[in-house]
Length: 491
Image 1 (cartoon, helix red, strand yellow):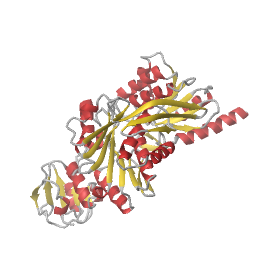
Image 2 (cartoon, helix red, strand yellow):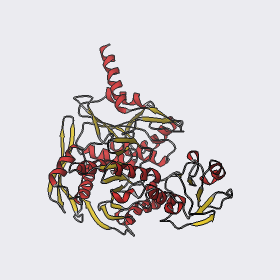
Image 3 (cartoon, one colour):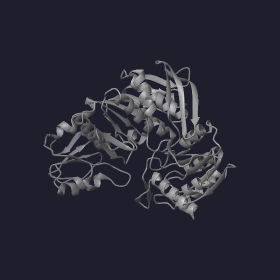
Image 4 (cartoon, one colour):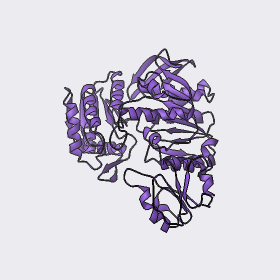
């Protein structure tokens, strides 16, 4: 492959060497450079690829792509671009033969609802014969292959590699979560999105390693609607107009509002032992009744989003209804049967907005008590801790504050921050640092009619402590706790 082929959709300057040389591989990790490869120098939070030019030249790299002035050995071709992250995205697309152009790409952005909605869309489309790839927070799904995810939106090279594998596997479409970080860092640059979706916006991901402020977070979300054909938006969200400012796509809306093109009306909560669900009527662009085995208002929003997307694929109403009835997502309102007296669920709610939405939803079902078990991640904004503590204090009847992913912080220090928020309320709480012990306390002290929520970990099967990920799946912890309690009761 000639270097010019990889650069064909970019503006660039040849600083030294020749852009018509043959190259073997496209690489953005200096450790993987081999003879004849082209290395893209990315400036990251931890290291800067520009520092490795001598090293990659010694390994036989044929060319480097830079955005800064550099000193390079004479035999190395140096190409300068304005932004190497953007260049990596477009070069990756070229390297894999522009696979996105052979797929209908559906991108979903928003603070919450992305993951559940991607699985709903996949379920509906597959029900009418489409073969659908998925890229998201939990995993990437390519045919029969599932790849655990590290980031909600992977690096651009990985996305294009996945797209190419999806085309190879016979997929005709892909639904993917598009994070604000992914948009900001050009991971999705150059992707021709068929449909872009905006679910909602809350003050999350603001901090030194994320967005500098809410305005930047909002601006980055809006980037998706400058690179899609159709934008589908939650008209009820207060930031809808801000996010779509400058959008270049056709715009459709969904929500509860009379202004929505696709509306939910006559919402009814369904509750019976071991089951929480919701049904409602879809009106506007479509007209039918829906029942979903996932509780709450946000389930209505998520399913409305999926319906709005699948309308563009001409999916029959009966197929939509059947697929939504069986749609499930690991770690999103995941009910775990532990007792005939009370309900236990696992959910990924790991910020104040998500926790408030979840607890508000559960309150609509008139439980005996809502018991919230949660912690907060380390090396993240302290504001999140105060806010989650305050939300739990106001909205749960009892809170058990525990550990989440402490990362490089002391677990107890994080708990102390959560308690600061909790003390702004009259909410009852205890703190139990060990997460398994916290779950055990919750189950052992469950009362008839309780709804116990294990929040924050969701689909995760690890706990990150001092840079090491240890196995920890709450489903396993629950079974261990039940065995221990059984033994204790026998004694």
